Image 1 (spheres, helix red, strand yellow):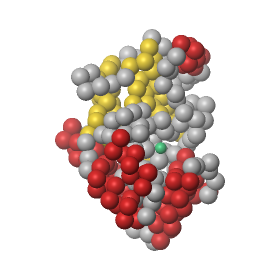
Image 2 (tube, protein in one colour):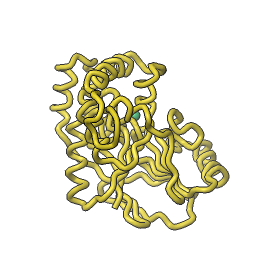
Image 3 (cartoon, protein in one colour):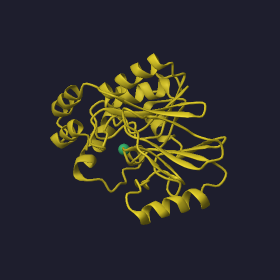
Image 4 (cartoon, protein in one colour):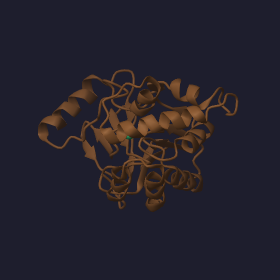
Amino acid sequence: MIAILSDIHANLAALEAVLERCEALGVTEYWCLGDVIGYGPDPVAVTRLAMDRFSVSLLGNHEEALVTGRHRFNPYAAQAIDWTREEIRSNSPTGLFKRGGSMWSWLKERKAFVLQKKLLMVHGSIYDPVHDYVDEPENPIEYQQMIHTLNTDFSGFDVCFAGHNHTPFMATAMGTLIPHDAHNTFRMPKGHKMYICVGSVGQPRDHDSRSSFAVLDGEAITFHRVAYDVALTQQRIKAIGLHPFLGERLASGM
Ligand SMILES: [Fe+2]
């Protein structure tokens, strides 16, 4: 049983709540689709957990911005990534962590995509694995484009797991499925092409403040939501001096 997480964004309270649920579910492996850090108040503790627990952890646009200094972030995200860089650097003595080298080196060495049999993992989309967004097909033209992509551009893999859009859904050539509390498990028949967007652990943007992630168990994919202590993360953001908007948005799930 594999948990697929994304966009933790240095939200320790959210990650701890998700890990606790995963342990109760019997998860044996963790894949992370990127953006372990950025925006949030606990990059060191969250990166340490990621290094220790995740067998896959991809490069997100925030890891890229951290190590290169290049980005097109809004001022709130830019302030947060500059603060994060100093935090990680000052907490990166070598040799302390399980999977080799310092925290800084680990973040720098993340891969942009991983292919495992028929499953592709990216942060963004198949067109740009770090930056592009899989947009939820809300109008007929976008929907037709999604079907075209799935039928023609998914080559050598059937399923693409993506993060970055902070919104959970499953797009197939037959339609888009949006999980909700009453219906959150779907079958993934062999040979069907699909995008599975797992949502965000640390900063959901689908008007639901609860952490979002997915669990893969054979051909079944289940989307989960877990409530966490939003107020605690907001307090941490305030105490550090990151912009209050970064805390406010957590409560509204936007
Ligand atoms: Fe993100």
